[in-house]
Image 1 (cartoon, rainbow, N blue to C red):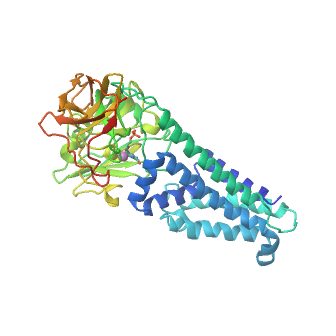
Image 2 (tube, rainbow, N blue to C red):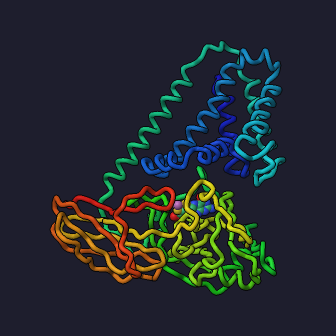
Image 3 (cartoon, protein in one colour):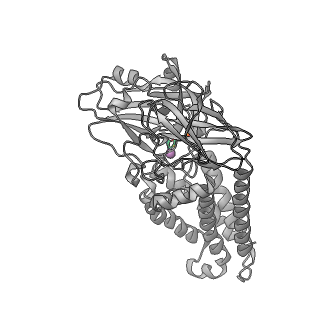
Length: 455
Ligand SMILES: Nc1nc2c(c(=O)[nH]1)N[C@H]1C(S)=C(S)[C@@H](COP(=O)(O)O)O[C@H]1N2
Ligand SMILES: [Mo]
């Protein structure tokens, strides 16, 4: 049974990771890969496969990692001659993890840069290797003829990946065209993060720390924050990677504390220039102090009148007017005031620094005599929306009143569109007309008009 030792090793590491918050080496490797791959390549994957792209990459890396243990175990009959004993062999493999893989993923030798610290990180990995050694020891010294299991596992993983990809394409194609709701339900709200596995932050022990260039550093528990007078605002959030016509945009009611109140209570130093947010997943980003003091910049703990879901940043996330989703940091643990321009996670990878929302509009439906969709202008407000059908002149659409100055607007127009090209453009309240020139999402957000064929 050559696969018992690697299988038990795989299960042990997953259990330790999920239950005891131990490091999971494939996760480190996957995150590292996302960091070193060119952004345009990741964007291509994410846009063609959606969030699934990252999960597939993660699963494949895990398969390669545990595959190496399977190979080791399959060849144990031969390898025993070199190592002498299963425990020495396992110890060597542990060394590969903590002395090679940890530093290679930027976590330092023994993982001293990990949030868990070097001791905890390497001891958990050692424990899993001890179990692997026990299993190797018990493995019958049978022939080392390569079994077919490896090839079968590989074929199975390719088949599963293909089914998942086809399934997703199917869902996208079958999704009936529906006009957006004013408020997007939390379950339907897009989620985006840099992580292959998002953090789940427990309330117990969680604190928001405020530090840096302030007179009185402070910290708050979630109960303390929720007891402060809060505000509720409707605001649209959109990802800077959202392509023209894409659905990485949603509108929700956010409840939280104006950031301004916390900062002013802490006494802002004159030199403070940027406000930096540090998150539980190691993500950081900043906004200029002026934006942080905007009365509608809030630290939100509720979405659509329910506690924030983990995927949307529980226990606390930033909602900042006029700036792409990227800078609306989730899972916040600390807020730091600094005297310089702080470049966040995506800025270091070439994405735009200001990240101001571009004027956008999208067609949700164009059939049975109705054209309808959404339009969004960040914190500037939508003035009007125009639709062009075939070669007819631009026509003004009807607008529903915006729920807030930071909300998208729903627009519609009754017209015969069957078989005709339909396009839309938004005009901001300040008179700016949505740019027709197509531009890809990288580095400052997509532009171009959404065009569909009516039915
Ligand atoms: N801590 C943390 N915050 C984050 C991110 C992240 O990876 N980590 N991703 C950002 C990006 S790119 C976007 S578009 C929004 C998405 O928020 P949502 O998932 O609630 O829609 O979260 C932002 N906040
Ligand atoms: Mo994003």
